[in-house]
Image 1 (cartoon, rainbow, N blue to C red):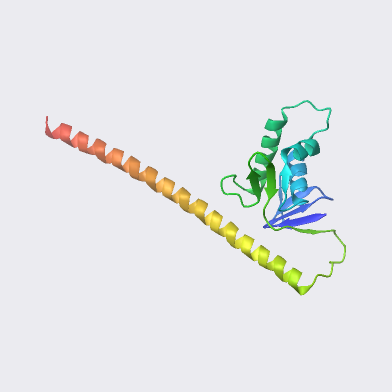
Image 2 (image 1 turned 180 degrees about the horizontal axis):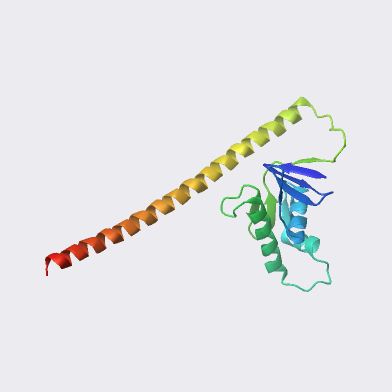
Length: 173
């Protein structure tokens, strides 16, 4: 299968994750997790299902930490953030959901014939998701600029206070 979403393409035959044609490094367990989520876009995948997909029953690890780490690595590979999810949404106390539209196809297979309404719905969903993703990324950039501006203002105030104190000390001598 080939899964396409956003700027990414995941080819299960070659085992590669590509972003705009370039290979993205991803470890085996996060890769398996991403495949599991992409196979069920929009559906909540319970943590227990993730655990059983990533580790055999006879494996002894801290599953909670292992799932958390695998999710973190998937987010890093996709450039996603938990607080401003574009691809992978956390559903508290339940699991995770892949929220971006996904096109899945079999390499070399003829495209299935869809009605115009289905094609229009999929295209509309992609456009809406792209707009949401752009808005979230712009919001994150704006928040970062505001954080930097606030930090600069604080340091500027500190520098101004130090300069005023130094001038006052020199004048009072």
